[in-house]
Amino acid sequence: MRKRHWEHHMTGRIGWLRAAVLGANDGIVSTSSLVLGVAAASAGHGSVMLAGTAALVAGSMSMAAGEYVSVHSQADSERAELEREKKELRTDNEAEHRELAAIYEKRGLEPPLAKEVAQQLMAHDALGAHARDELGITRTLRARPIQAAIASAASFATGSALPLLAAAFSSMAHLIPVVSAASLVFLAGLGLASARLGGAPIVPGTIRVTFWGAIAMAATAAVGALFGTAA
Image (tube, rainbow, N blue to C red; front, side, top):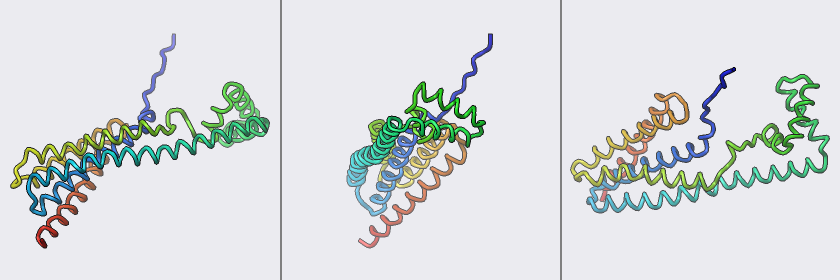
């Protein structure tokens, strides 16, 4: 008896993983940058916490709305393409057979085999075959607006809460170095986790996320210090 060959692929995670990583990264970077900017402007601890909390709430809602709208637009386009394909299958089924067979020929099948494969797949699920092989729309990678919105909002709130907690337990004298160091650790952890979940190389992903987060925080702190000095 042959052993069944199991393979574990990461493509099923692409949709929610992209939204979650984007949300968490934005949450850490934007909130830590705002906290550092306000602190560098010589504001009090209460003002820093208020600004950070406002950033968490507003950012979470913004991420959810933006992700829902953008992914919903993709879903609308996919539905429109599928409706168009349904109409073509009803009105000119033979041409759709030839179109699908031509696709398989371009992928390397001999013409008779390509025609046979197209016939069998269309007999089984004509729309599914054309959605997958002509339009590139699959069940695994289809747009899911609600899932993307929830993942973005939750991950942004989680990411945003991390530097905010670091600020909450820091005195003003040590707030800037503590929040900076903690945020860089959080970003490195995010890069490592996202690379591992996505099956990508860990070191490049970790460095990329940490580096650009550090640039954003440094720029915002510099602006806060400049305006705080000017005031």
